[in-house]
Length: 181
Image 1 (cartoon, rainbow, N blue to C red):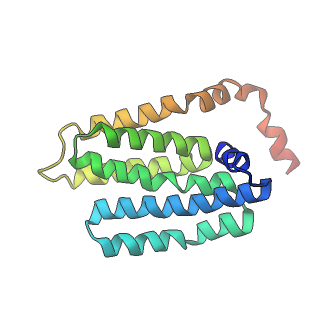
Image 2: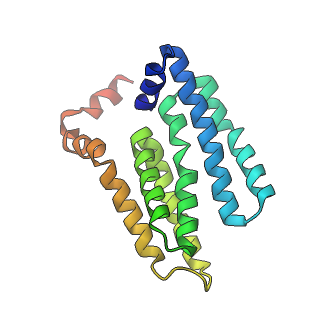
């Protein structure tokens, strides 16, 4: 999110307008991602459009933008629909394009808001399990392999962020923070 905000700032926006630009971009991209996911899942323009509008006006979006102004958490809501979209597409189509979309979206989720990554990862895995249990005859035989590759590639793309954090967690004293609160 900070890099996107810096792009707005370099384009001539002041700092406040750069934050507003990132928040607006998060709304637009999350709506687009939800539309693409629902269109691929249900193959219906109406359900995709309605679902995207409901996702846009969901209480969590409104709270993150209008109450807390959390740029990272707002950007964290952009990537799950794109991950779900890539998973649905990988179920039927053998394409490295959707493997890359899913991996970059998973990396974007980790980089934008790691707490959202912890929240959404079990939901994403549950979605994969449900899709596998509801397997259709047209399913790609390498579906699970592609999903694992997608997540591993996403972890590798974001390793510059989470790997040092894992290595340096010994220097952070969480117990002192909890006692003060």
